[in-house]
Length: 177
Image 1 (tube, rainbow, N blue to C red):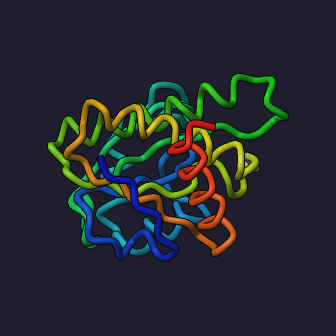
Image 2 (spheres, rainbow, N blue to C red):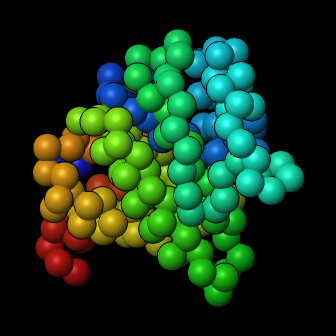
Image 3 (cartoon, one colour):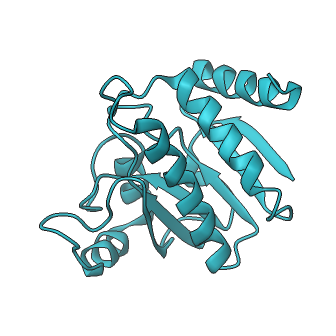
């Protein structure tokens, strides 16, 4: 079992798969989504457009994941997941966020990935409180790694403060608090 925490650019990581914190349409956006689309090149947008809509403008519902090739990225695959928008915690946000991580790990296993990098899903414009999100992230991934212990998981923070929050969550999980 391996969970690493780094602060940096997820598009440059040498892993089999990176996770994109996407919007339901999967056609690019701001934050990490925009950065991944820019770094991957136009092939990514074309691949996302080819994914079927399950509702008008929705290729991936909140809490689920879809996978594409990595195109110009070092990663072979991009796993797109749609995290919940924070509404105060009373709209099943915790369950939906946990579902994102489960769905991403399932996708990674399906393509035989041995390493995966996650951004801080929903912690940007979607407004999820970072400390609460980090606890969910670490707990779900630690549980997932009990059955996928050969998987290397990288949590890629977008700032030093997020990196600290992730380290604290991992430490608390290891202490069982």
